[in-house]
Length: 353
Image 1 (cartoon, rainbow, N blue to C red):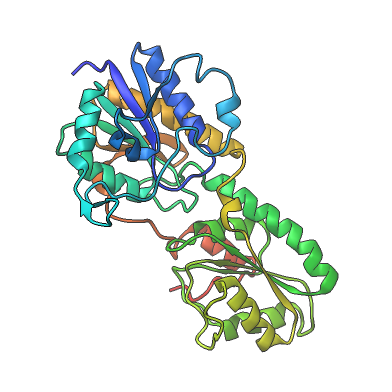
Image 2 (cartoon, rainbow, N blue to C red):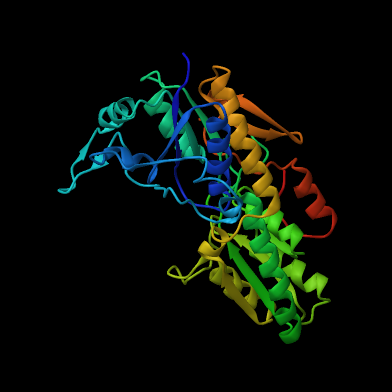
């Protein structure tokens, strides 16, 4: 089928680099003579009447402003499952047919979906039965999309974590405190691992690897020669709470700080980075990934590809079948080179098989 018009949308949580993907994909498609529509607010814009879309022209995506801008000017959503869409009265209905009908009414021949692993599963379920060709572009600060070494937005988040540790190190040294930095990562510990190594953390706690707070405390006492000294701890939000934690309403980072203060006798403080990891201008590598992925997605559609994901593997831009992507999130492996590096430089990373 000859493609004449495509849609581009962002889905799931926001991150830095999304606008750069839109810019690259739109440029590549317009260069082929295709019309390009930006779908607003993920799939939710398709439920509006008329559908909430914007024409992406060459003038609209020209220049470097979108390359540098954080977030997504199209808007995004991580709520409202189209197969169980909540109505005003709370009842849930299947709105998938309405969304497919809207795409066909707009004359879309194919779709570029910029999203995480959850978005890939959702759109594969939505688009595959309808026969609408589509290509996914991986984005997530968690870096947990299967099939690719890195996703757009990840290194921008790592940069935020690394800078935070740089700043915390001076105040930790001034007061000889333990500073705990809580970062995002409900299921996967990539942000904690990469940010922790880059920022010189003394301990990195990830959801993939069990930890023992007594062991962490012993590690701290060992590296500080059993006297107060500056210590940096990175804790992913998805790690288990300490068994003796009584502050269930506190953040996991605060629980870790309290537990370490009790066990070591050293002052401990917690900083929760939260949504600062999602915001701001994309890091240079995310700009490169976004630009390469956006162009590759359009090239794949032009070549007749369908149900695949652009990917960065072994230092190269490539693509992988969607069957290997929709299997669920990706986790840090005990054999990951950076896990081995962290342990070799004396960083506590939990119980590694």
